[in-house]
Amino acid sequence: MKIELQRVGDGFNMEAKDENGHTVSIDTAAENGGQNKGVRPMHLLIMGLGGCSAIDIIMILKKQKQEVTDFRVSVEAEREKGKDPSLWEEAHVVFHLKGNIDAGKAQRAADLSMQKYCSVAETLRRANAKITWEVRVNS
Image (tube, rainbow, N blue to C red):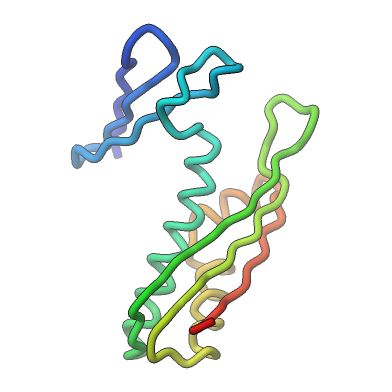
């Protein structure tokens, strides 16, 4: 894998590009000297947790012939306070699914993702983050 970053302007704003040409804007907050024109690097990691697990869950449910008509993920996470570097300490992920879905299968898919398949979840766990999750079907 190859990632390239290009500074945009004279601040901290960077445009990150992967080998397929997909881009993400990265920056820091104004109070840190940035212009708030992009996602914070540590926030990208939490976004990756949501995206990685979502892909796993949808893949698993499709194999089980479950009809997912809508899927949303919300993540609340907290970082360590008063430390440098300030790592993610905990994250709570809520999977919101709609469709003709067996709730037990959805829960099992989420468990498999978060405990076995999602590389981002494992990366965070290895840094001692506590990760919890819940599944809400048609609620």
